[in-house]
Image 1 (spheres, one colour):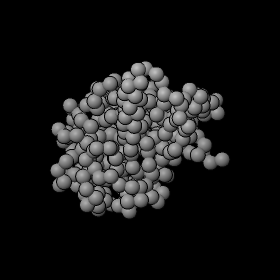
Image 2 (image 1 turned 90 degrees about the vertical axis):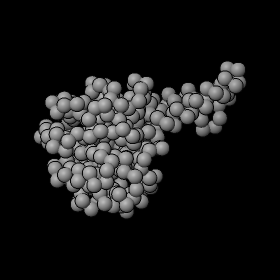
Image 3 (image 1 turned 45 degrees about the vertical axis):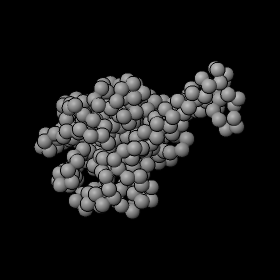
Image 4 (image 1 turned 60 degrees about the vertical axis):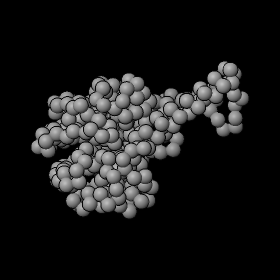
Length: 292
């Protein structure tokens, strides 16, 4: 059996040909569903703000909630990649470094650190403000110096194309493992970013209704993108399905529908959740070497 640390395992996947998909999850149930189909998860700030707080992704998240969620995911699913969104590092470099250490100890594969300043925004909405580049780089370098094996994604939320290219080049020149330009609007823009970042791996964030084009993994691979994160497919699907189910229940005067073949019922839900509870799925120590 081959053993690797989580950061190394994700780093190796990133450097393989093609584009590695990571699926955004917002709670343990969505994670349990996602691992039936993909071997990489993304702890989405958008999803956590919605599920844990019932609030938009504009800076309400407290870092202990992120660490606790990452720990629960890793304990239940020790054999998947886990990339964690840590927003701006929760303001200052000292906290950002502390969170990075906590997440690495909890078994996270990597983190994304952005260059926004408060009040922050989802990367695909208007009104984003960014830190001076030198200030962000100081915070990024501090996190890079803190991590042991953790993969670090350097993210810029710049919107002006010249500033995007300037920052992307600067981020690529650091020891960050991956560069993310969030909210990139065209495939031509991706090509320009690819040029200025050289051989540094690139991450592309896909969100339904967001500012970026909808692209397949094949198309992203042809553009030189190494990782694709899908921030909200589980969250949005759950909202649609819950709304539809409750409208149908109200229309039927509270009578539950008869189970349809292939639909979720108590038995199938318990079967899914029982897989997460299996002792074979649990780590003795999340920060030790793991089979891959």
